[in-house]
Image 1 (tube, rainbow, N blue to C red):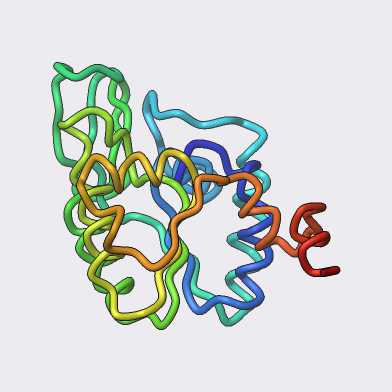
Image 2 (cartoon, rainbow, N blue to C red):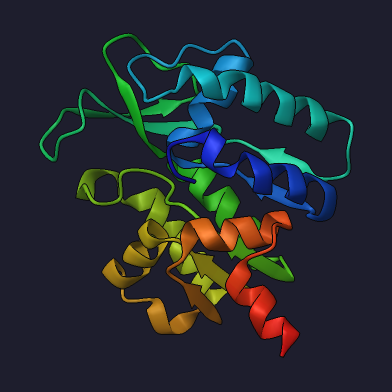
Length: 200
């Protein structure tokens, strides 16, 4: 989850080679929808993320890792706690609306996938969880990660903030507040501090 594909493209590329499933959520899904030809209304989407999303979709289509996108969304008129809301069956966002959370069907699907996984890495919220109207997707995924029988790793400030908000910090196996650094490590990049520890 999160907002920019470019921040996570390295780890997505790496995980397309080694993971069974990648579940996309948060505003990250909108460049993928644009790459597929869907309308996204006023949803957050960085134009330079669209070709990166298209490349990831193409790579997933020819590999063994499933790249899953939400199939329904929770919409708001604006990023505000008291905005008008609606549930969208599907992913084509109407003009004047913005996607601010994954929908309940997607959240339940993702929770089911997490429950059956041997190892779970979660980085990035499923929506604007800081707004109560759009916290349900992130809460559902957070609770699924906390309850998962597999080994669970949560990385990144927003993901940790979600665990704290929902009282689940002690329910996962490993929590890292170093989101960017942990992603670089998972991409296969050498981190000087880790390299120094390995040398010892």
